[in-house]
Image 1 (cartoon, each protein chain N blue to C red):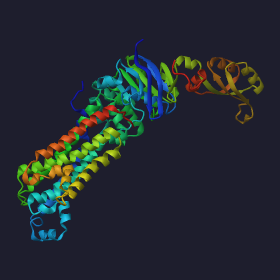
Image 2 (cartoon, one colour; image 1 turned 90 degrees about the horizontal axis):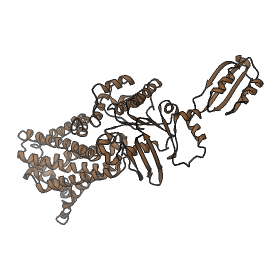
Image 3 (cartoon, rainbow over the protein chains, first blue to last red; image 1 turned 30 degrees about the vertical axis):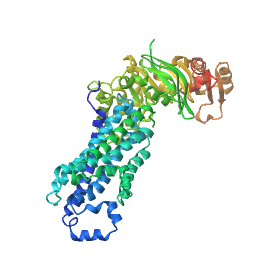
Image 4 (spheres, rainbow over the protein chains, first blue to last red; image 1 turned 90 degrees about the vertical axis):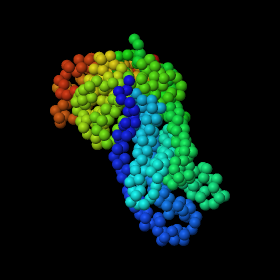
Length: 267
Length: 312
């Protein structure tokens, strides 16, 4: 009966094009700032000397041990750090807005009073988050490849897309955690805290696990490690890690569908 | 007569707070049914239950022949809903927002949105978040009416509207009825319910106090009157009026002759106002003020045992 398909998905995309320009500029700016410096920083003897003088624990924690290669440098500066930060913030805030934010402003009631089901609402709005994150990931890969020659990065084109898929999967996990907590509680604060918490925890676990052989098993619990542990930018796509990230996200979305269908919508 | 809304012991509790005590209510098809009651009486809870925004703690409701939950999106497409706390945001224009709502409700006939916006004097080209409360309310009304739903559920529809627009809204409600649509609306402004509704339910503290048709309420209405009379004496006026039944709080004074009106009369009249008018007609009336009847007070007098009835 609905006149056009995916009305909530289309609205979410249409409502966010302004902010998408901002996020896209942020991703491009970060890459354009860091990558061209690789020839003078990453491979330079001065930098290697500096890294040697730093405590190895610190270098391991921030993942700068591979900084001498183009792939390692791009991973350390963007995919493992700034890009991770940007997309985590974007994904968590979109995931929060999808249900909890809309409920706290009181708009969710009116939307659900129309001819849409709660299942449809969760699925369409999460799909809009996926598409937006995927765009930022794709954009990052395209910018990396555009700078590949001039910045002497030497990255395999396919590997750039593998790294982007890992970044999107990793930050999508934060987004879907925010969605499911929003579906369970309807509280913006809880949703954001959970989404950001997963990212921080994953990063911290990975950094700790990097410290020694004894701590290595901790890697198994870090989404950050699922995404980047197999070094997708250097060695190519890691289907196991991606499967874990996207699979858990999908399960969380199903949980959100069930949760929202079972409760009162307030506010 | 078939009913469009039927509730059976419909109950809603939030934790230990009972927002709606077991409620039995029936709204006939093609009627305008008003719910009045103070804030917190359970009007909004009732409407949210009908739209499956809230789920009942116990009891059940039938809306257009289906339970709100089972009816799902297909049922809600046949309902136009205006929430009591309408919050519209966003950088989109009013027209874009309405187009979105049209996408997720029943089909909207071409030109309907513009016609409704014209009637309510609403500028659709403005960004939603820059609109005043009254204009947002108009947007809310347009989205509720635009797909000509079989049932309109309107929670405090006139809040924030100026009097002229309120009148236009009441006209729209009457047109909806003559169109065969059913209107279920709430208010704490009693006069507007009285102007349009066929039946009135009164909710207080989550309980149904009464359901009556508006005509019988009007008959039992309680009005405050004030009259200024010249060319007579307070004693004569008092003697004349004291013969009237249903007249209470009579106060006759003549202590303000400076305005040229020697006798001032204030009183409360219960029920028919005609005998009072006939009586004071024998005097020279300088001014006359009759307050709008207070329906709630009228009803509470009729059912003078508060907090008991579970329905009629």
